[in-house]
Image (cartoon, rainbow, N blue to C red):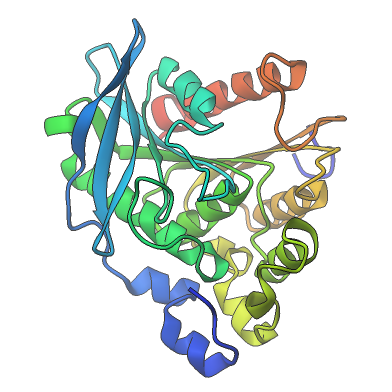
Length: 310
């Protein structure tokens, strides 16, 4: 436990003001307006059935998979959001599949979306500040609430919804949580910053070798402030469980420390864990990985199922 706290972006503020990127813009939008449909069964085991699904987002047909526990239900819903994977090589069963499977075994309907531009989802990938990916998740969350208890979501209780996000997916989860007040619980794992200035610097200078993110880096500070979720934490109603390896070579450990401090200062529910010597993605079966999954199970049980849930 940390001891200190228990498309291409056009330059200029006018273009940004018209682009719908700010937290205020996202909060005014309408989400949902569609249904989840099952394409086929991908796998069955004694604990859950995995389905290939699709749903609409901004006129695009997006795909993903859904794990539905074998019991009667209804079960709370957890949306599992993957980090950056080159869209050209992305596959639906990404590296985060094992986390989605583990959460399904804990007793949750788990949906793992392929963001736009990640095959076989339609659309172009990326977009400024990954806002389009957050919109895809916001649409998915709204559809799940509208459709829960019926059809493919017959076993789902969409009123009890959590997010799990790793790396870029953690940054997406944070943006969704400050826009959508109906998100109950959020697990962040080696998450990108809620400060888009820090993300832009990291993407341009470290991740892409100065090939991606220059337009974001040149965004005026006054506009970055309106886009950055870290400046809107007071809006979220979610409880947070934040996890980060101290030797993370991709995303600075200090970013999660900063987020935890800010959430605590605002009186938000936040538990914060460091993993000494652990890197960006914990090896399967490692001590850090086992500890992380146990903490995730406890957190979601309290916030989505148990005494701490609403």
